[in-house]
Image (cartoon, rainbow, N blue to C red; front, side):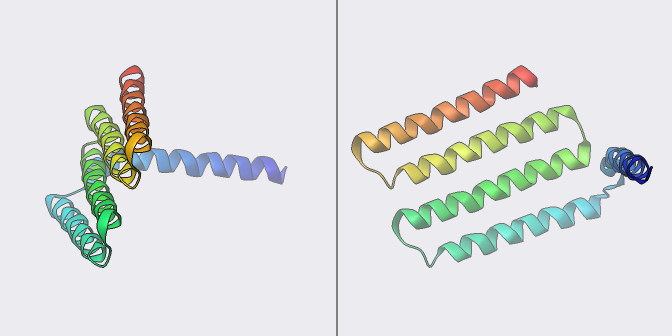
Length: 137
């Protein structure tokens, strides 16, 4: 009987959480939104500054990862603010594009045919991710 009670409690908590997230978009004020954007910007600047100690392609990859995290965080913020399906799709596209950008930069550690194959694989992953977004949009 206690297993059934804990299951009921879990379902209740899950449904309350799901209901509350639907109202999250309405609850974000302009000030909260601006504060969140400022935090994302500060985190990006700190991450980019941390890249200065690195050299060559490791520095480029670090900077690309910092920029990708910023772009994804901004897209997530917009989706969380609006709750609109269009913003969810935009978020998924931004994730795919940024994963590709980082993967492509990492490929530059390789040379010649290996680098070309790596970039081709990264592009194929982006194309697949975007096709999945369209299919399930």
